[in-house]
Image 1 (cartoon, rainbow, N blue to C red):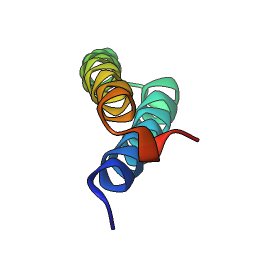
Image 2: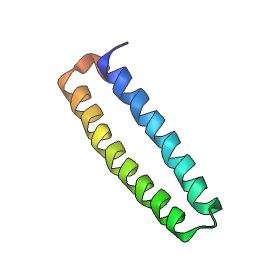
Image 3: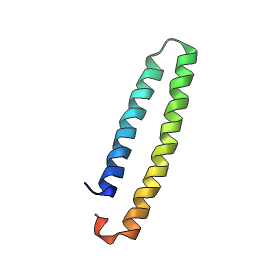
Image 4: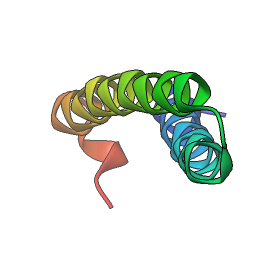
Length: 67
């Protein structure tokens, strides 16, 4: 598996984690737990954005990765 494939797979996994955290935040009865899930979801979103920037850099640097 190529580096870009690994990074794209990581982005996809993080999207799934974000969705799970969102669901947990919505279904939680405890306000502190809701806040924790939301904060963690926000952190995952920041990580996802950073990884997406890296995917774009890899595509730019390595023309064979262009779709």
